[in-house]
Amino acid sequence: MDMDEAATKRDEALRSLQREVDDEERRQNAVHPFRGDCPRSPPAPGEDPPPYPTARCRFFDRHGFAFLPSFASDDEVRSMKRSMAEAVEREWDPSSRGSAQVFRTDDGQADAQARSDYFLDSATRCHFFAEKDAADESGALRKEYRDDKMTALNKAGHGMHTRPGPFMDYARSGKVASLLRELGWVDPVVPQSMYIFKQARIGGEVTSHQDSTFLYTTPMQTCIGLWLALDDATLENGCLWVRPGSHMESVRRQFVRNPKHFGKSLNYEGEGGDASEPQMIFTRLSDSYGKVTWEGALPDDLGKAGFIPVPCKAGDLLAFVGELDHLSLPNLSSKARHTFQLHCIEGEGAGVTWSRENWLQYPPGVPFMKL
Image 1 (cartoon, rainbow, N blue to C red):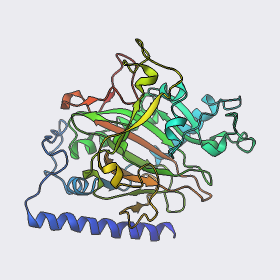
Image 2: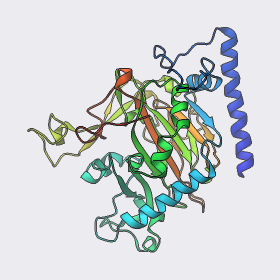
Image 3: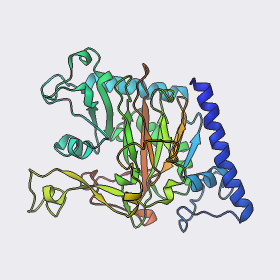
């Protein structure tokens, strides 16, 4: 299926979902079921307040996601891709044994990310993680990738937004802050960002998951993902699939620091830790875990499970709630599918707390970027 045909089918699906929103509004006055008691943010100085709530916000609240075409300019996209290529060339040396750290999202995820401080230490830095099929048994890069090492990468993260340059500029842009406030975020902050490569032919699947599994907040979930396409994302190269309405379900599990490894402090301080235990583990949180039989996997039939594909042009943005079930299929095509992703939450100004159990923790005294 070519890009134009896929986009036509996407738009048909979005129009159908919009009709659900319109029908609901005809049955009752506009309501705001998601984040119900959280007040809308005031407009920035000099800005006119948007209609309350906006049509985009109403769609977002009902279905858990919003599609924003041409959110980033061609110059922004080129600048991000160029900056990443330069960083890989300058900073990543996978030539030695054990130096190609692998990232995976299948049933080997907890083990792959739970045996090295390299993953933990990426919270405020740019660390590089290879595709599982690009490294050999010793942890070295396979020979076929050594002349073009960027084609071996799965992702870079998780502090891209903390480095001066195009990623920070985009994160701090007025359009990002305005979108978050339009959608209801009061004190948005950025704990995490990452660059996903989704390489041609070896870009692995990203199994069904909820982002709040990894970015857990209390007393309510406030994660929002901003998924920016830097290449055309198609059915062939692994575009995102979402399950509309699934954001109304509970978070099924949480990816946490393992107290058996870290001790009660969860940060290596104090006693009680056992270095032989994995650093991170998944814990089950709700009864819905057993009902969603594909959690951490791929459903046998995406359509019957309620998923729809959302192909994107470079520069298009998908914004979605942390509870939304989403996934992507392997890239079996000859074209890579690069994306840049910001994950934001509500800050302390909104009465929200970042879970001390989350794997990602900044050094003491270093706050999340405010938007």
